[in-house]
Image 1 (cartoon, rainbow, N blue to C red):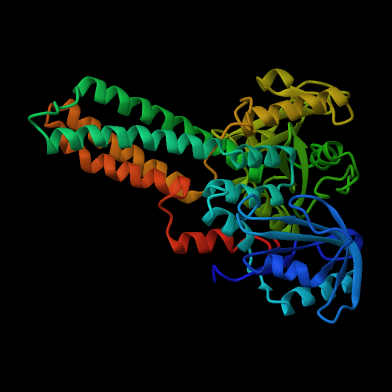
Image 2 (cartoon, rainbow, N blue to C red):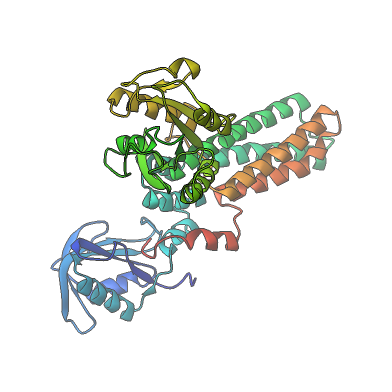
Length: 447
């Protein structure tokens, strides 16, 4: 990327609509505004102005709104111009072409946000949270993205790095001026490192919460034939998605759909009934069932609870033993003969709203261990962030081992420097060019 170039792009989705936005950023922004934006009053900083948008020959392209954000008080930290247009694809194309001919170049994916990062307007994890917010498909995902966009994770990383820097300064003073600066007290030094390690441990625990918020969780509905698995899928979805028939073995393939529980996306997979000695086509469906079961986080084991458990039900129970699962005794309206054999099972019917509520609550308990997921908390969202925090904790652990062994305290310096460098990757203060390229490449062009 050429940092001194003026960039432009369409910041709204393609297609017809009420409003489309063309965004411009860089040193040539105000010059482009003077050439292409004609208004009765001069553009004022951060004020909405009705204006005509023309091309380089003065030909009217649209009548819209112009907003100018002079540097440094803008999204990118540069001069920024936004042209709010009627969202005709032809109008938007003509305006963007005029802006490019006036001296801008087409922005690369994520270049606006990358400039915001490089100009100190956003920390690295805040910049990534912008992309997460755009991609959010559930309330949980949007709240989690907003938590990191608010800068809480950046602030925590900088606070912990500042404590480590302070410890390193104490060590440096004692090493460089041994006659004037005493060695730090090992006990107090260890307490400070323990505090940092505890804070990093809390962040590690937040990783799963962030993953659930972004990706949701997966549930495989499994059981013997004719247990009501497809009826359960339809009931949870609130629509007739799967074919239901009283004949066993109707479902031959997996069916995937999604619902939202407590703001979290839950991917449901209806599967073929599991039984011994199936016929050839049914066997292929059971093979897919086993793959879906292996990949799912939670098994929703559904049995016909109106009669005692038989070998088909016990076979499914053995297959799912020792993993996260929800047991459901279905068809309680016909009888509950199997209920006493399945401790902790949800007993009810797919036709009963209270049963469905109980199943949603049970899925939440298994899917995210029944915890109240505080999506407003900062969390680690990327593999490189997790690796960096792991590396920092390992370095701090080695430093504490030095202290526990009673070795000279200055031997901690190298490990503390490694911990500082590792945390710098999370805040972006030590991020390399290759990492930045990979992060911003996944953004849309207008962002």
